[in-house]
Image (cartoon, rainbow, N blue to C red; front, top):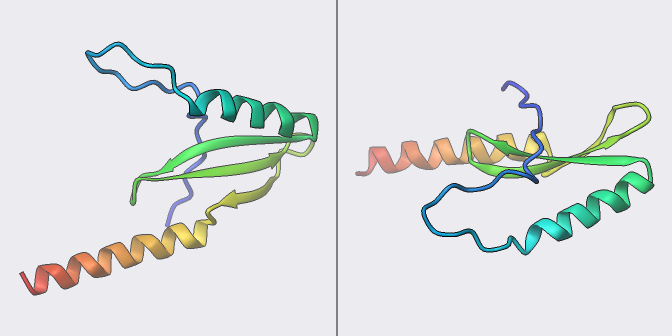
Length: 94
């Protein structure tokens, strides 16, 4: 399974015809990011395309190395496989 580099989704806005209401999550994410930067860590948020799940990658700002991905790549892959198996089962019994 190919690795998907995390994207910074903190500034992504949804387009719609309605006026956008302030996002209550964004200030909390920005605060969390500032706190982690003070400790020498960075966080990027991404979307695992196969299952449309969000994940976060914590990196060491000094080395650029990945400290942790939440949920892990293995867990995202397991979820994708389960999704495929359930889909195949439903196709057989439909």
